[in-house]
Length: 325
Image (cartoon, rainbow, N blue to C red):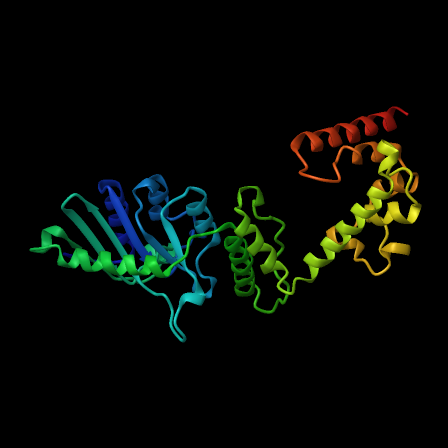
């Protein structure tokens, strides 16, 4: 049985991660150190991710670094999060417990050190290390395992949509701490990888970004209007877009801000505007190329990869022809 400071705790955890077959932990926060690419303990856990069993990281006050959660999720480690909504009123998820075992041998570290650069290096921390060599039976091990398992039951998986939301909140919190007088959120141009999302996760992402449902309805209305107009001209084949009225083409292309005729009252910018660069000129001059490219996309049924590739080919060929023109 030993009492460890922060530096000694980090060293001992790295040793135990390497020597045991199973790792389980529950911490209030996990964070990549600002002073190095990652603290030594997280680095060791990454190298031994397949050893990790039911483990839980807290997210109160957005103090856990989203990058740590992203890595565990991307690498399918058995790590979940205790969301703020799960916490009881006026309480914080605050344990710091690390459990290791191999067959009948086990080690338990419990104290004040979070899985952060401060907890493992710079802060004043105390952690008690108890092993199977210190105990006559496994009662302490079983109690620690039971506590972590109960945290696991109360926690949630790290889903793509939730991580996207948490990343924005995390960066916002970091920005406010770094610039307390600033009211502007940090620039965040990255988007979640929706290609790997399951449908319920993608739906939740939409709901989080559009809680009122207004934006979704506006986009569906615009798509419905677009299909109606394309169907009206579908007898022209590849020239369907080419044959439309100027007001219709410009509204569908998003090169104008306010629609006329049938598009009056429709939010043309639901998917964004294209009124910058060279594209508005192609629409204004009624490029046949754009019309041929759009004809590659079916009005009914699924849009397959080959449809998209045909569309791209028409766009590229048209661009080359224009340049050589």
